[in-house]
Length: 498
Image (cartoon, rainbow, N blue to C red):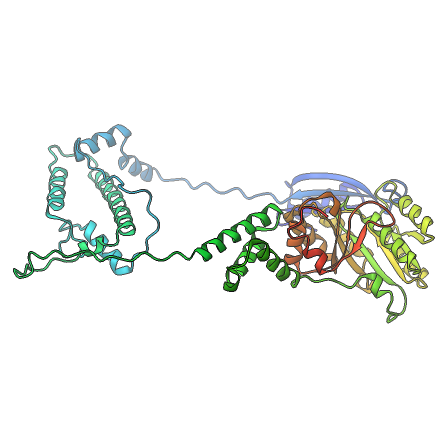
């Protein structure tokens, strides 16, 4: 398999593989790694065919540098002021009494203005011809207008002509825009803390002698009554959110849970434990539990044995899990056969044969894909055939695809992806996406006894919507596995161990 930037080349010799690399990527490829391995070898060492693998990367195209013309460089040099010239220009332009607007309030919360109000504010704060307009509902006092006129006179009154007037105009414009922004923020803050500011800033009309002495009392806005029950409800939801995150649930899943509870107004009077129980039941109803092999084997509705294949990354306990389920079936009187494809891990075949001998179950090894179907036919008198596959990492695209050659659709096997319960959520999702090309039918989580939080596992079940029938809780054979149900899984939601 190939990725967007990397390609994998496999051949019978290093020279042939290198020839394919240069033929595909050009004469100067980037070689990331090269290795050889035995295909179809016993334990990965004896016999088999030697294969050579080269991983190469497509060369990146160098961006062409665009040369700037000397005229543009000359123009840029003419229109750029040195730091000293900039300071000198600012001192002569604004003088020593450069006014600044200080924020009188803490950083204001966001206040939304309507389009007309925003236009009014901008018209009030800045105008190229007339300065501050006097007919705005945010009209400023005469003292403020006089001060602004004096400051403007200082700007206009420049004794000496300054070079690069265009740059100075830009600096002045930037300074004015900065002052505008600060003033708008101050107004927003005032409106947030004192809504009566708008009443003060209404347009002035001609004084009526009859009402001239009357004072306008500001409108008193009554305070909103605080719903203490609702406030307590949100505090409980926050506690639930924090507990779920501590249990390693996905943030996306947690947000969905909390939103569901928020939308249920009839829950706001419940206690914290009752809220958690309500959420647990909602989660329970979303789970998909698959029928176990122990139930399926009781139904004689198909001819021949039922075939189960166990796939997953290295170290999740595939071989041990195969032995546990085979032992459980044998104890119920069912005829079982085990086939292993794992000829890479030292001792894997001997381990499975050891378990098979104890339960009087047949164990065979398939070194090549074409050997698997004859072994299935050999055990057609069995009730169940369990297939143990070689472990592969989620990034080993080529090796995962090779497993597909052993498990064609015609085999009609149930494919169970094994994941360790102590994996991180993101690693579980990446592993599922890699192995799903094999046609994963359901999950089987292992090592529940080695973790104290089950949020990652339960989040994967919500995210990927695959069925689950079994979990393992230790290394003991026989035993240490469970055929689970919805109640068992949902109880793990807030649990700190099994």
